[in-house]
Amino acid sequence: MKNVTDSFVFLGYWPSAGSFGFNTDILATNPINLSVVFGVLIFFGKGVLSDLLDNRKQRILNTIRNSEELREGAIEQLEKARARLRKVEMEADQFRVNGYSEIEREKFNLIKSTSKTFEQLENYKNETIRFEQQRAINQVRQRVFQQALQEALGTLNNCLTDELHLRTISANIGMFGVMKEITD
Image (spheres, rainbow, N blue to C red):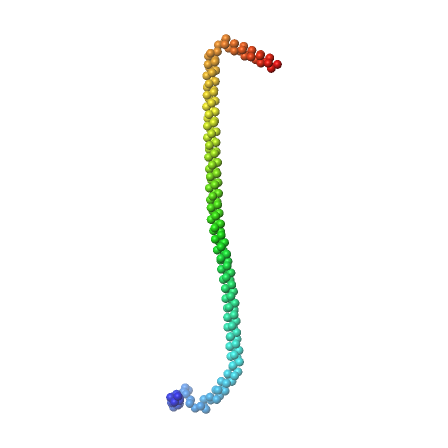
C-alpha cells in the first residue's frame, strides 16, 4: 500500500507540461463535489436505470414467451405433419398393394379373355373347315350324279329302240290308268 501512495506522491512532483498532469491536492480536485454529483446521479438515475432494466427484462421475457409459443406451435405442426406423413405412407402402401392386386387381376382377366377369344377363333376355324368339306363333298356328289345321269341317259338312248320305247310308254299309260281308277 505504501508503494501505491508513494507512486501518487512521486507523480505530484512531476513538472506540468501544459494542461496534462496529475493533481495530488485533494481540495483542488473537488472530490466532495464529484461525490455529490455522483450521489445525485445515482439517486435520480437509479429509477430511470431501474425502469430501463425492467423494460429490457420484460422485453426479454416476452421474447422468450413468444419463442416458447412459437416452439410449441412448431412442435404441434411437426406432429401434424408427421401424422399426415404416416397417413400418406399408409395410403401409398395400400395403393401399392391394391395396384399390384389390380394388375394381377387385370392380367388374369386378359389371359382369360384372350384364351376365350382364341377358343372361339379355333371353333370358327373348325366350323369353316367342316362347312368347306361338306360343300366340297356336295359338289363332288353333284358332279358324280350328273356324270352318272348323263351316262345312264346315254346308255338308255343307245339301247332304247322305237319298239321298246312304245312298250314303255304303253306300260306307263296303263299304270296311270290303274292309279286313276284307284283314286276315283
